[in-house]
Image (cartoon, rainbow, N blue to C red; front, side):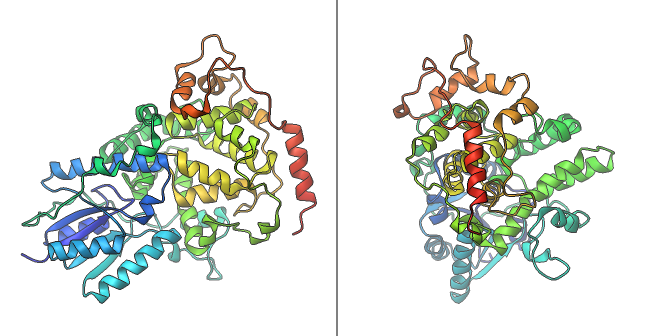
Length: 470
């Protein structure tokens, strides 16, 4: 038999539309699927690490149904791959490209070292629609604003979807860790039992979710997507984050709907491309994940102490601003937060409270099951004003005005805030089951007064912008 090929799974935990896996299977060689709990996994927050474990387990079960399996190993990626190559005699390693700076550094090291060892190391597309280096302005640079980026790519061809391939098993399987021994959900503690009721895990479930969205929700998507109490979004960010579905599958589904006359399809396609734009920026300006994209904002006097009482009030969903608190509580119960609500809570933290966006970004990275390094970084900086946004940096969202516009009947607030209500909703009560016990929170406590009023917060933010030193 030819030497086996290791297919290193990362944020691409699916079998269909997987170029790296398909190429390995088409070679005729035995294929050994591998997942490594490496340095990038170890650095992730509680909720994404827990959710990743569910996806890894789902992929392993799908592979076993097809006569294969997922080999699990823990350690630095290069060391683990070299050990597996020694164990199996593998002559090649395939993987899907990643574009965030930590993954690029890891993959560059791995590819160079394996090639020096005489092992073929090949990366494949599939994590984004358009490789970041293939989208250029007319001057030859990268795009810094979304609208022209969209215009540049909207008519491009996207490769047809690849079917799940047939995997040839090796004569001997290498040893594997047990997923339970990794304890990927340990940091979630009691929150896992609550959030677990709201997850949709695995490739088949992700594809079903897409089909239902196109058939049932897309006609109302253009307007309904901004209503946080309405179930009008795809919720596919959870599945995209772990690669249980490819962006190309979303693209083709949206294009078919548009060709069939669905006017809201283009809005959906723009949201899929928004994710690509985030990776476009991360690839070309990797500083966006750790520092101000607009470097002149380095001098801005944001608060950076995460121990401040107003920061803790924001984290706990007890700022006294109902829309902000409802959004934070939705995140603790479901692991997800509506996109409109994300903008509101980010604006309140960075503008009304004048807290550095990095504190918010890092908190989301600990709490969201759909955490994505590019989308999270770009979203926070877009809202804070330090990122790639054509709108004025001094725009300050008013949570009360936003609530009146997008939640006029207080349906969203009632779903997530229990204090002061005679019959609070089940979801509002589950917040108290999900959050850490040491927070000592109870629905019997009175709803808090604002830690910073909207008028005072807005005035302080505008004053800081007026006196800025850049």
